[in-house]
Image (cartoon, rainbow, N blue to C red; front, side, top):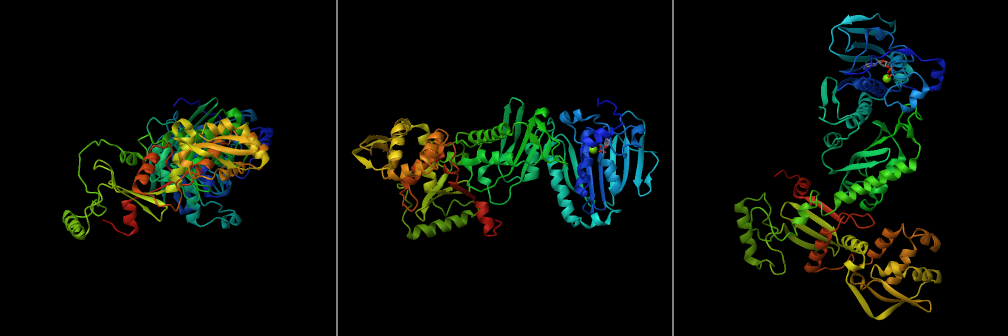
Length: 596
Ligand code: ADP
Ligand code: MG
């Protein structure tokens, strides 16, 4: 390690006043935070945390960092001693965790503390105690390089505060929640967490990862393996954004687990949370939550980290810029990763369903929902098939224009509303037919009229709208013409000449009225029309010809499904509601408590 030998100095009274420190030690988790921060500042690559009885009895943190020189050991417990800053100027550019020089002194004032440390330049380790009798003398001890701090009996001398501690389980949960932040943002540090003598987490360092570089392995370790996480990446001037966001299909109404870091410091910031959800907007139903880990790296001069006593919030010099960058980063990731063309997504199997040529071993499977289940034995299958064949006619092969290369083994409609698709690889999809059609139409509209079949009306359709609305449409004929919606205005009446075939039965008076309803009034709409383009297209696509409640023939279902599979974002309709619900056979089995 090539750190300068730390020198401990006493801060001037002026600086002490400048640093209006809040409460440092509120509960066991605050002790853990201060001690882990110190270990990180000491450049530890391994931190071992031992918690007893929720930290109420004991918290012990060992690191392999630089250590504390013998001559400094006696003064680390004194208030406002720090090796990290000298004046207030340093506060603005400081990237280190601790800097008030009062954590250890505050901790010793509310608990018994033992500290042992071996500085990298010293031959021998030293230890010191602090208890109700005060500071002990410094003694030699045996220890490998690094520092171990043990904090026992928190608030033993302040019963009023001890009373306010929650149960050991709750205090432990708070410690664990705090530590997850460190686990995520420091993939370069090996963490071991022990609870009452049992190892709960042992997270080896991820090789070649630096602090602040979120690793998928840690994300999965902390947030769970089940969601499919998408990598976030943004690099603008003075700002880098990295992290992982959950696949939109993992959404739920429950509170999400979200982590935000600024310069490796966990913070909470509603603006950033809002920006993340803005980025998700067309991919997520309203009010639904997802998990995410977002790490911002920003020039320290553009962010004030001293607005909160425990440094849990920050103030950005230009918050709007930060928020729009976050939104853009999220949207970009979703657009890139969820595109159907990206075969690494969940949809790859779906895509294969439409592939003509199959790779791998050809295996003939009759299109029969009863025989494709792997879990039935050959004998069962045979019996079952014979049984079926006895009184059922041969399967509707011709009606089912798929060859055996396809991964899809069945498709049918339920409730005149949903299309059920069974895949050979034990997946089942339930598709909302209207949402799917909306999505398909929306993406066609996005691409413009060249991607659509346009129909001319034999007799123009007359539409009467309010005067200001009619004027607005007159101004925007080009916009609609690009979508294949062609009209003329004669004596204040709109004469619709043509529209894409998807809208052959659409009521365009309604379509226009819904577009006008997007804003409070016409001038507002006029002002925001460019920005609202996607919303306008979403509104129009809602009027496509496939409705909910409509019976569909197989050809239409196949056609719709084929088109959906080619969409950039087949997961949701343009309003953000889900278009597809994916179920696996194992999910269905587990619902029936079947283990085979
Ligand atoms: P601060 O971290 O704000 O400087 P603390 O009271 O937390 O104040 O720590 C006081 C000093 O003790 C630190 O500045 C540092 O020099 C030393 N120190 C504390 N913990 C460690 C550790 N784990 N490894 C090395 N030095 C430490
Ligand atoms: Mg500190």
